[in-house]
Image (cartoon, rainbow, N blue to C red; front, side):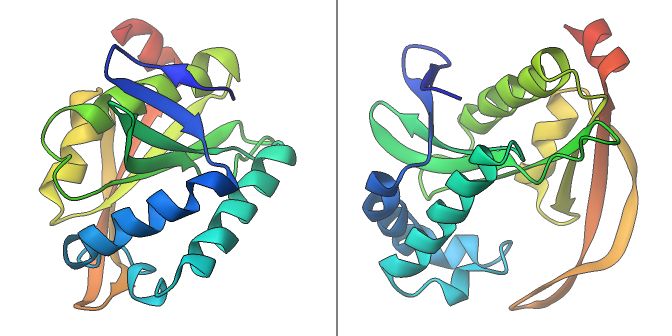
Length: 182
């Protein structure tokens, strides 16, 4: 994937090593909020941890297993969005995302998710896209709900966070459903 302008203020850019400084700074500024929902945040204590993440994302893209992009708002890194490993045999993929402090509630991530759903279902011709969110993470759950995903179930104690285990809401969207919504 190449730089992809979503609108006049939003752009998706594939992660490259030059983004690690901005990404680490964003995690640092947003640490308290992010650690409520993301188990990896406490382990990211220096920029080299972000370098490892970005190298893995680049390798995943090179191996045709998906990609991870930065979401840039007016030239500033606002968050990260990407495909989890694409399951080519079952033609499905999961999308993961997070936004830094101060960028929430403005529709940025919904717009970015819409682009990734379009690309997965229409360009890659996958059959299914899945998004999982902690059941108590109302802002994150609002994204698949706005995009027409179906709540398929709840996975109990799916993830261990610093506060304890959380349940995940599992949302799915099929290619045939997306064509009807588009």
